[in-house]
Image (cartoon, rainbow over all chains, first blue to last red; front, side, top):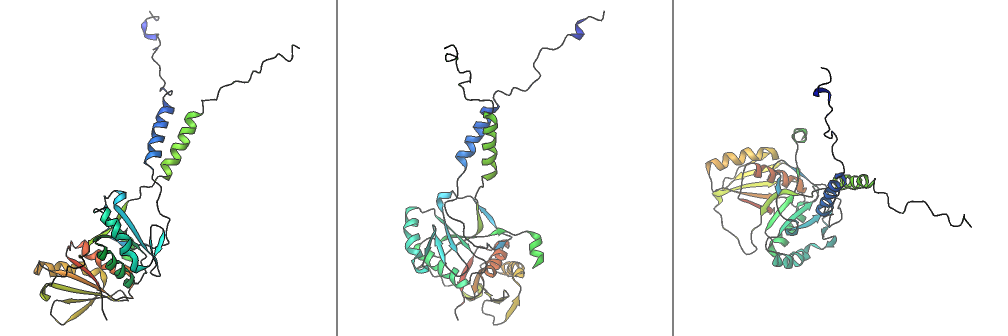
Length: 146
Length: 140
């Protein structure tokens, strides 16, 4: 009676197959290697201002041109310092080559407004009218502190 | 002579058992170092260089950003100015816009004022859904 079919052990493998583990890992690895893009430009010492209404831009990277404005009003484009009156000479041809270009101004929060105004005038002269002021999302607690 | 003929018994294959570990190590490295460098900020469209529009004074809300961060607000032709903090601009705009939907915000910033005060005002205007904004420098 006790030797019925009940005691027979199941022969199905109870382990997760691990032979394809390496393949999966490589697949993910290759995905991340391909999708990682390293920064084109060097980091600049700019303190980005905060704004609660900050919006994300869904612009492809090739349509974005950064303009850095550092504390003293020095302007950097593509890692080169540019005198303010020559900005339109650089942006102009770029805008002519790519009409969808968006200029992202990454300016230090303490920079005097006259430099920002000069940059804007240069950009308008170059025809690059779509401009974004780069800001960080403002958290509520930092707003209450002010 | 027998000693000389002994074959080398060391395996001639690369060990592949740690392959998965190496792959995972690299995978984790790329996972951690990948930053999606997204663009964000406050967008605005600058006027074309030749394009100057004449706007009736009654449709203009003058906002003057001072070097100390306080903001002077003047409504169109009315000579009276009021002094505000930057974070009151959104409600001022909403009130003024509800009375006149042709309103344009003319943000004039003092040349030596820090950039962030202009951003504070622009932030408030964007938050209040203002679309017609003009950024200028205050001529002295």
